[in-house]
Amino acid sequence: MNADLLVVGSGFFGLTIAERAANELGLNVVVIDRRPHIGGNAFSEAEPETGIEVHRYGAHLFHTSNERVWEYVNRFTSFTGYVHRVYTRHDGEVFPMPINLGTINQFFRAAYGPEEARALIREQAGELAGTDPQNLNDKGIQLIGRPLYEAFIKHYTAKQWQTDPKDLPASVIARLPVRYTYDNRYFNDTHEGLPVDGYTAWLERMADNPRIEVRLDTDFFAGDHDFASKNVLGRLPIVYTGPVDRYFDYAEGALSWRTLDFEEEVLPVGDFQGTSVMNYPDEDVPFTRIHEFRHFHPERDYPTDKTVIMREFSRFAEPGDEPYYPVNTAEDRERLLAYRDLAHGERNVLFGGRLGTYKYLDMHMAIGSALSMFDNKIAPALRAGASFESGGVEA
Ligand code: FAD
Ligand code: UDP
Image (cartoon, rainbow, N blue to C red; front, side, top):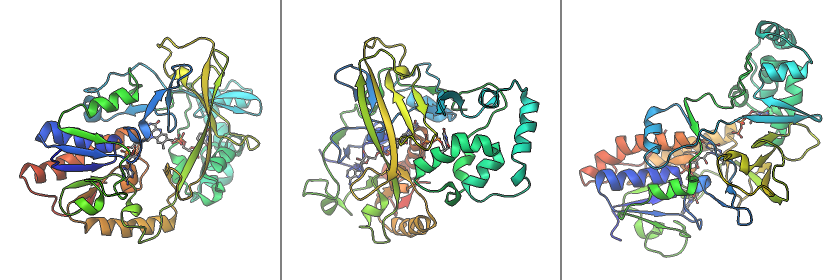
């Protein structure tokens, strides 16, 4: 194919750019991915023995309050009415999560109303009242008091981050809501649901255009294929969604990531845990949570005598591991600034997506950020038949 634009990476960021460039500008776009499948981390497939859809890189729940993104994604898929709820198993008992009035009353064997519960938590958090906690441990105690913090947050966080919560920034926990109602929805967004025909059908529909060619098993930095970096850099506009440090050959040092190990099992029972996600916040259990995929699609006709579960373990990524979550130490942030400068100086290459910007992005954020990059940088430049003025990083 005679390409007008090369996209490196077929995740949601790369596919959104490719779809817009092909449909809106009529450009020929080649998308390459080093993996053997489309879709980046949102890829899913049927587990062969049961037919149950498994999200290969961990459970993916779509949710957004961004109307533009919602309208855009609905062009490629419709969504089920699935509403995400999480439960957590502490000390042989199951509680609703995030912490809400139900969790508080069950934990304290009480029947508090919202104001009584607030007063209790205020009292329990009193040891840190009026301070401005800088680490996750102190922030957690200030938000919910020590007993709830130690039951549900402390060890879960230590397992997930492999770091003492005293050494983690307070901001990590600020994401976790505490509700003084019985509302136990996990997300607060306006729109939520799972793609009716699965993630891979949605991702494939985005690339379903004769002007888009997807080449799998094709690494930008390896081999001598037509779209290898050495053959295209400086000759073709490129949107790069791989790791930013890899692009610059780790010149400023490697950015650190957490990775996950997934242990999948097919069990000879129709239902293992009665819900899609069960967290395990206790210290003596090595995994953080168990996903049971059948519960993401109660509307589907899955076998009633088998189920698929996946235990999730978290650890620091070594070279060769999949990078999942940016660790974001002070050293990482310094390196990232240096890489941003390098990226800005790179002619004809734009950096985007989770790996290209070293930012945790939910799917709707990756899609929203790609739509903005298309509007602000790609369409103005390529509509005029020019190239990108200089490189850049999408915020
Ligand atoms: P990716 O999906 O990572 O795609 C990047 C692609 O680039 C990959 O396919 C990779 O193979 C390819 N690539 C890299 N280097 C090269 C190279 N050298 N040559 C060729 N190709 C290359 N979001 C939600 O909204 N809800 C969720 O519940 C949710 N759960 C998540 C759970 C986990 C465990 C993780 C890790 C993420 C989760 N996300 C979730 C986030 C979601 O996965 C991302 O928002 C989305 O994948 C970002 O898309 P992307 O295109 O930026 O990156
Ligand atoms: N968290 C926790 N216990 C839980 C769930 C979450 O301590 O049962 C904390 C933990 O520190 C985690 C943060 O809240 O890193 C954000 O949780 P979220 O579920 O958003 O993490 P993700 O699903 O993105 O990994």
